[in-house]
Image (cartoon, rainbow, N blue to C red; front, side):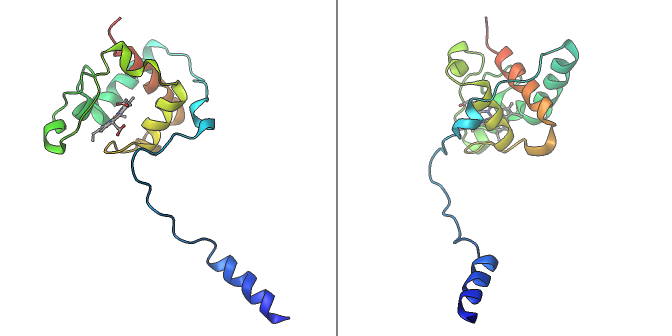
Length: 132
Ligand code: HEC
């Protein structure tokens, strides 16, 4: 009678075995990749995104997005050129939002430093770095 209770209690206290650290690029969850960008850019929101980019992104991706930021040499980063329209062509807004929010590889997560709408505006800003 007591034994099943004990098993349940153990499951409750130790719900899962520790997860293994994934190796290599983690696939972006399908439901995150298909999210549509809910914001419409305004001059103000894009000015804010540009400012955030200057603080949080330019040291790696470069002010223009060319991938030649100050930290690239120190961290031995290999960054794609965001000024090339081909770079983000095949990535959805949802994927970019996910990457910016959660980070990727050597890229740190923006996480809760920006509100979701700020991060969606950042997606639009990052796309605007591509030369027309
Ligand atoms: C410490 C350096 C660093 C910072 C800071 C950083 N990134 Fe990145 N970013 C990277 C690296 C490295 C990758 C490539 C990740 C991978 O695929 O392994 C990347 C990838 C990306 C990508 C996807 C394009 C690609 O190369 O596949 C986007 C978009 C992006 N970053 C935007 C941003 C934005 C916006 C910010 C600021 C909020 C930011 N990054 C801050 C290093 C950085």
